[in-house]
Image 1 (tube, rainbow, N blue to C red):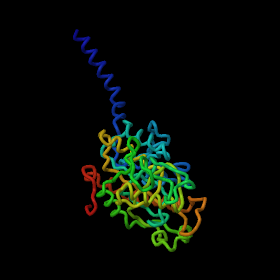
Image 2 (cartoon, rainbow, N blue to C red; image 1 turned 60 degrees about the vertical axis):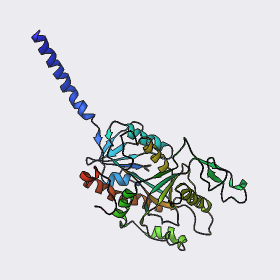
Image 3 (cartoon, rainbow, N blue to C red; image 1 turned 30 degrees about the vertical axis):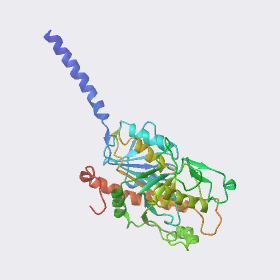
Image 4 (cartoon, rainbow, N blue to C red; image 1 turned 90 degrees about the vertical axis):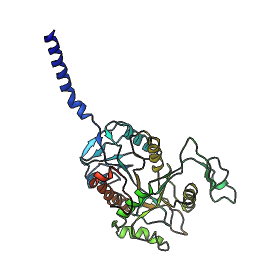
Length: 350
């Protein structure tokens, strides 16, 4: 009997010894900063950059990992920074949800930096500028009437669900929270930390700004600011649509927000993060949205809307600005992780 017990114990020890490396390998990787980009143009390194490449090369993020449910391979570093390409529009929701639900990472204390390019309101900033959002507003749950058929006293044919005219706050129950407020102390801290970052300027950007000389902020060289993001899965452009965007952000934030950046993904990302906020997998307070301007949302005053909205020169400057600004915040979070893990940094405190 003793021999049988001894053989059994030896066998169990062998099994546990063989499985220990696998168990260790499956332990979630602790993450300090998650960077969510929405697209990459070609390869992750060595060619024309999109949103992802500046982070991959600039950090650098040398390790690759495949996350089920995310089409593009993710990248991470040994010091705790993880970046993904979420894909654009509706696919963003799927990718962010897949990341949160993956058991490959420990995201419980991670800060999130949503890092992408956008259209900018000329009343707020210039191409190449970078804006930290205080609010993200959803523009997808909406009623639309052809502008050629709207009542004469309507400014445009877009209005809220369960409303009967523009600029009346309706409802979007079961569809969207419509507006997400980011932690103001954290946003103020990120802005304070980066407000003096020098952003690239060049003769090509000067040409892009030339038509906006009568608009002081649109004509400035690129700069860092605070400004709010409007998310819609469709691309849009024009003077009337820009006025609608201003009105829409003002309406849904009860006058507290200022439309600055137009993009296609922030509403989906925040919606998914909110859906998982009570799960314990993430900390919803630790979310930052950084949008950099690749184009203006409307033509210069008095000029017709032009068909080609996105310019290569503007996009290149916006890609560079993402990491130049966002990287400063990420490096502070990692460098001071002993404090940042325990509590959110706040403006005025180092």
